Every structure is written in structure tokens, then in C-alpha cells.
Amino acid sequence: MAYEPSGFYLLMRGNKPARFCFPARALLQRLVAVCRLLPVLLLVLAPAGCSEEPAQPNIILVILDTVRNDFTGPGGNQSGLTPQLDELAAGGTVFRNAWATAPWTLPVHASIFTGMLPSGHGCNINHWRFDEKHGTAAAILGRAGYETAAFYSNPWLSDRLTGVLHGFELRRESPLGGAIPMSTGRSDQGGASSNRDISQWLDQRPRPKPFFLFVNYLEAHLPYDPPADYREEHLADLPLDDVVSIAWSEEFNAGLHPSAAVDWERVRRLYGGDVNHVDRLLAGLIKMLKDHGVYEHSIIIVTSDHGENLGEHGLMEHQYSVHETLLSVPLVIRAPKRLMTGVRNEPVMLIDLFATILESAGVRGEDIPANGRSLFSIPGARTNAAGGTDRGDRLLVAEYGGGHPSLVNSLRALNPNLDPKPFQRGYGTVRRGDFRLTVGTDSTVWLHNTAADPAQKVNIAREHPQMVEELYTAMSEAIRTEVGKDSGGVGIDAESLRKLRSLGYIR
Image (tube, rainbow, N blue to C red):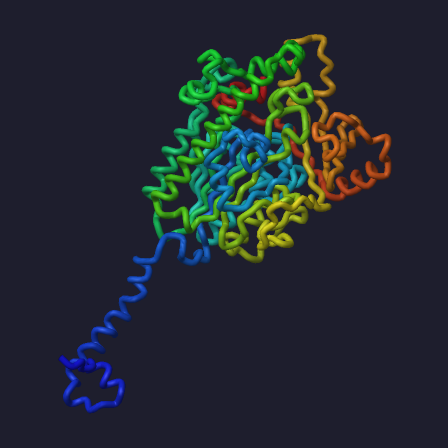
């Protein structure tokens, strides 16, 4: 049979329409109908991850409370403690040289949410209440059309105690299971409950609206008590009830346990089990985001608020010190449309997350504090810096107001012969390149070369007076001290007091 061209083809070629007009018209009508459906078909058939990032993507900020950088894969640890964070890092951007602004929860979270150093927002050991005059990322994003929600169990983030989550429409605190026994034994730190709450929230939230989700997981905080299945696989040589308690930590800080007699490998392994526990909670969150279809349209930021001393510098936990063990934190950002994947080595601070979050949401016209910057806007942010070693000359700044009087009194009660001055001392510290200056409130000065002396054991201040002067001047220019009211006169509710005591923050 001879091939006969279609009516549509002949019509387009200028042939007589009389013979083929009906088929041509029918085909044209069908084509128009298909074209009208084409956008819908493309949306349905497009593979996940191929669509453009929305103008206002979801933004997810996760704080792995008390997780040291060097216990994570992005921080260089190869023991496999953080497989979920490692997977996120493989498809995102790792900032290997990130610094916290303080060694404990409250001032760091206030810095993240405001972009200010502790001296700017005023939250410190003597002034716990967040001043709502400071604009927060949550409040700004709420005005920009975002739904904002915070899930946590750390009492320092509660409204009744600090109000640092100002601007979040939903603030849900998970209970610390058996909080009082946490000072001596085992307990739930609240992360599983937070994940259940997040799942319910994702089920019920209005879908068309972008959201800013904040999560704080407390599981790496003292006491170190890994889950049973982790113990069976990785800690089978230790007793099933082996725990590093807050009480033991305080006794060590008070000088009752000589460092040489402590099995530090055991302490690190138990802490590492808790770090793995946090990573599992992160994995649960990532799965929820994928199951609800929001993962691909979200910018995800994962970091820690501070690290932890594990016997280094003669200390346990994260008070009384501003060493690298406390200030160096992991930072991974998954923003494939904004940042190239890979490892970046520029010095960055957690205050940079404020501007980064606002830029993620397309917010313009807000004042960015002088010491912060968006991580999307740093030089070379959109080029792959994997393998680079340049640490840059940016000044990194952190502050610590000293141990709370109740903590110091508790140590002295344990050991009446203890010299309280090192525990009462506050610090200002700066790092530029490889040099790190730390100045105590008692005028004690330390200078370290962190490249040659990463453990910060050798004070070279006397050998480099000019460097001390330069860094001190730079720190003075960066820090703008705000005088806060003494929190000793602020009423603390019984529940907050109970939780803070259980976590070892006050006595």
C-alpha cells in the first residue's frame, strides 16, 4: 500500500484542504488540548530534584548540641560516628573552619538568630533574658511569609527562662525524661520526642507556605549514655550500665580524679556513642523531610553550638574554657542551587548563619551586623574549594563570661582546697590565621600558634608582643560590650531550675 501523508502534513504543505480538512482540524484540536496540558504533564513527569529552587525555599537549621567538630566525618573523623551527616556533606558544602561565638548554648543561639556577638545581644552567664528589641531571623522570616517552628529539649532555649526563640510561631519543648537522675545516671534527652512532634507538624502544616524549621538535639550532652544497640555493637567490652555522669564530671573539674588515672579512651568512646545517637536523630529528620516531599526544595544547615572538653586542658564538659575543643564546630550546608559541593576552608563564624538564612529566603533590606556575612556571598562561594588549605585572615571572635557562681561554689564544696580563680575567669578570644589570642578578665594573656600547637599547650605571648598588641586591638574593635542586668535577681521557675541543675549548669 502506498504511503499517504496525513491531513495535517498536507495542510502545512499548502495542499488543497478539501480532501483533508476534517482530519487536519481534528488533529489541530487535539494538539491544542495536549499543549494546554503540557505544563501539568511536565510537572508530574519531571524527576525529583530537577525542578528549579522556589523563590522562597524551606530553610531547616539543625543544631547538634555539644558535638565536637573532630568527632564528625566533615571534621575529619573517620570512625563512622556520623554517617547521616557525612552523607549530607557529600552532597553539600562543608565549612571545615567554623567557629562558635561562645562555649555554651545560650549566647551561641542568640548569636545565630541575631548575627551579633555575645557582647552585642547581651545574653551571657549573668544575663539570661533575651532582649526582644533585637531582630531575629525567625521574626524577619515570619514577616516575609514563612511559617516558623522550633523543636528542642534544652531548657536554655525555653520561653520561661531566656526567650531566645523569639519570633518562632511554634515553640515546642520536649521533656527531659527523668531529668533529676541525669545528674548521676541514665535518661532520655528528648530528641526522639522532638522527632515525633516534627512528624506531626509536617503532617498538619499548610502545604503552600514555605517554612523555617529549627531543631536542637541534646543527646551528646552529659551524661554520656549511648543506646543499648550501639553498646552491643561497639561497646560490648564495657558494662551495660557504664555512664559518664555529670556528677563525675564535676568531681574531675574539682580535682578529685587525677587525669593520669582516668581511662580517657572509655570516656571518648561513650561520648562518641552519644554523637552517633544524635546522627541517628538527624537521619530520622532527613527521612521525614523526604517522605513529606520537602527535602528537595529545602536549604538544610547542620552545625553544633559548641564542642566539649574530654579531659583536655584538665577539664570536662563545656564551661571554664574557650579552647578549640569548644569553639571549633561542624558546619554543613545543603544548598545545591546556591553553593558548589565540596570542602571550604575559609574562616567562618556561626553569626554568619543569620545573613545566610535571610539570603536563602530572598529577604532584602535588613541590617546585617558588622561582624557577620552571608556564606553565599563570600569570595569564591560558588566555586569548588575542595583540597584548599588557605585559612584566610578573617578575625574570628568569641566571648565567655566565666563560670556561674553556683557552679564555682559547687566545685569548692567538693574540694575546699581548690583555687576558684581559673573557674571564675571570663575570656575574650580572637583568631586570625594561625594565631590565637586569649585574654582573661584577670588580665592573663595567652598567644598560641594553632598550626604548630593545635592542643594550645605553649603560650608564646612573651615572644610575640607585637602580635599580641595587634590581635588585642582587633578584638577590642570587634567587641562592643553591652552591660546586662545580673540574672541573680531574675525569678526562675521551678521547672527550669530543676532542668538546669540536672544538666549541671547551676547548683
